[in-house]
Length: 140
Image 1 (cartoon, rainbow, N blue to C red):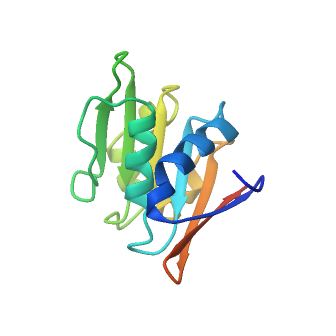
Image 2 (tube, rainbow, N blue to C red):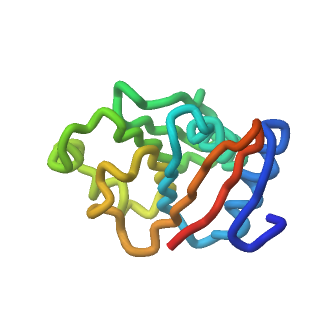
């Protein structure tokens, strides 16, 4: 990334940004993606999953809440979309702990809905779009 905590990019560079994000945070397994509807959270997660060599088709888990993808070495990646959660207790119903503490990558859209449940060390990724340019910033 050009800056330690911020990157500006267009969709053409999203693969590079995905790789750079993983390289910048090599020990992080839980990534929480913050941003408005349509800012590119799912698109960035797809690029990250491609970089991690998923063998499955990556799509938004809006209705299923969680998707599991396998990599070419048999590892699991988990992709969450908590947009439709009405209360935090619903995260308990899906057994979020089993996924978050599995040691596997977890990519979370709409983490605001379950903020209190995010484990220490979660990598927070903030996205916004200004005039067709996406801005990515890492937070605490």
